[in-house]
Length: 315
Ligand code: ATP
Image 1: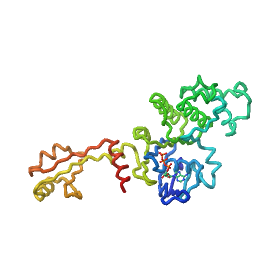
Image 2: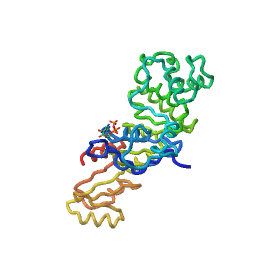
Image 3: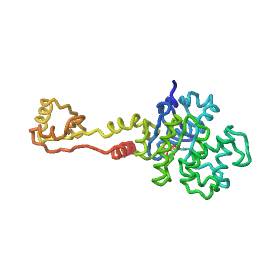
Image 4: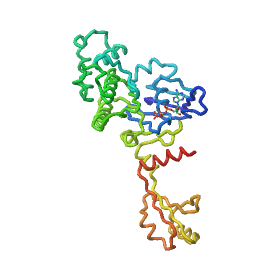
């Protein structure tokens, strides 16, 4: 079975730009997965999402969405996806329900009916179910201009799920939502995946949100900095190690070799011992050479992420 999304060597250079906004990225998303594209401002997240959702042309590379080429089969791709962008695209003068109804009619889901009452039962059931989960059912018949930013975001999600898209794309979906709505939204997205098998692709700035994902792709300056399951990325980024040094390095060097403890030498000439499953305390106790420097490196995921993004920044 093909992946829900396959991206190969994707490049985007905006007109007159000196560098590529997306600079040769490749990744695949399994069907039914929750995939998070994470990165700082300007990393290339929205650019990638816009190409995947066929609203922006790429410079080169291959993009397949729901098994179809995003250029050659654009219309088919569009019919299989739902997209919620950062900037709402609702008609503020219409009610929430009217926004959903007209969108559904545009998608060819239902024939035009001038009022909610005339819509078929399964439309009413679906909109009630979706708006109920997102907590906006009581507001369905209010004009959208009276909605808060968070309610508008939820309404867009309701609207874009009406046609049961195979893949739902969300650009920073929880930005502007209060913590309760954020939690609700996550619970709902989890339910949608479980019940409808929807693949969810989202972009986020928040590391903790990426931890909900099956797989995470961290991009920075248009390139992939890390790709994999959150726990693997965590392990990779938060690798614990000891930095050791002694006035007289040779005996320390010999001692570690005798103890069969693998190490490398840093640019500063210090000895770096990756801990893996070893206990720092046990290693330190085993060493007899007087140490002039000892540091245990044990970053949190947040620190490791900021360090990585910061490091890239200085290049
Ligand atoms: P944010 O988190 O701030 O939304 P992002 O990761 O989504 O950032 P993009 O919006 O994809 O990043 O931008 C990637 C790069 O491309 C940035 O350097 C940005 O300035 C540039 N860029 C984005 N849109 C355009 C455009 N229409 N024309 C020229 N350059 C653009």
